[in-house]
Image 1 (spheres, rainbow, N blue to C red):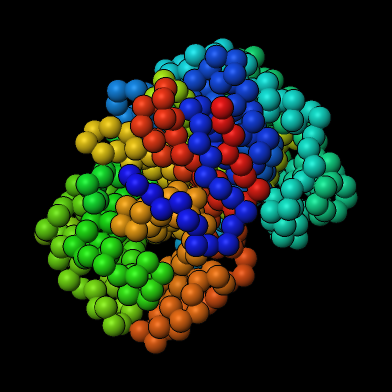
Image 2 (tube, rainbow, N blue to C red):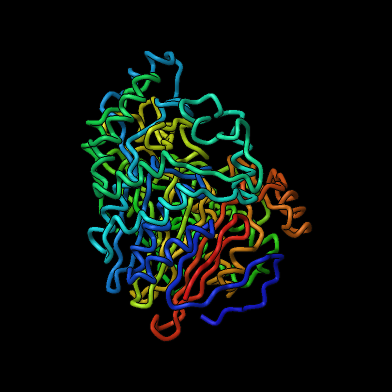
Length: 536
């Protein structure tokens, strides 16, 4: 790909070129991954070390109680890993309606009744056992050191930490773990998380078994019982991550790969399948026609995803049916280039997250994402081992349908890693975190790179929009004002947002420049967060 390296957007970042590379949303985590490569580890070792460090460096988005997904190229083929958690054995619609009333529609947003079994640690272990080179305990060393010694809070993390404090400060264990100053933190406050260091040591020593049925699981069971939860050590002991075959869709001579449902990655594939029917490159990159077309394609994708996507065994249709070319062509005909629409689902039967990526000179590439879901997740933090627990259970429905809650079932998931290939060979590992922004970010940045030849850092820095519901969209304040006005005139209900982090996600990108031993990679890290690309 012959990229344009003139970046037309305001940014503090430049693309980084290296043969071994780690891109994350916090510099200390990028350096943690690089340390593993210096020790002789590979991209998988680096990804795990970076992911462990991120639970300490960016707790506003993830923790030791997160879920995770990964797509990796091992040098010959792609592999997918679904390390999202399952519902406790006690969870049924009746269980929640007895506690929260007959009118309850979902499990609660916060507290222990939002916590499914966390899968991230099991995902680290599975990746290490199958593809890693270094001992698993070595991979935890940087995170343990950071947790023990502490670090000074950077700007974006501090902003989100302070914003979450009013809602979460009274949740079990939250203030003890995350408000050691007796208040919301300020930039440059030193944060130490010694209980999490204890948890990381137990995970390192037992290769994760302490977490799944051992002393950590037992501590969480006891803490949950004290605070009205029903999750048990047995629920943890029964958990296993799942190796899966990524699903894919061709676009402009390349192939985008996503994790299959229960995740929402299929939304990006649907949207690109619709855009394939249009001459996107013939439209000005930041003009209203291009942006309107992409927004409408994304709306059509979400209409189907929100109706059909769930745990695969519960879905009414298959991913193949949702991605059928004739079906997507029929959906494309619904787009009116002069008018915003509120689309319903079609009938395919007829027709607070962190993302990081690593690559090494052997050709191994890893696309990895882990999340507590809504910022700090449930707000519950087990105090002895520092386990900050996700709130993925809130993604279930209590009403009949594909995503209705049931014991040992996985909820609809928003976090999605992505991977791009061409003619069966690796091209790019990338992701854009941020709830339902993720498939939208996958699509918007890929269109900029493949249709408009923008380099990864430019595509990352470019202004984004975010579709919410109905005709409502948010746009970043740096989007072209004439484009924003034109979108409004077409019927989009546009709100201009100043807080880029909150609404528009943040991405990390590694593009393979050629032979990894010779040319290496081109990498980018989103300026919307505190991140860094580190390489050698």
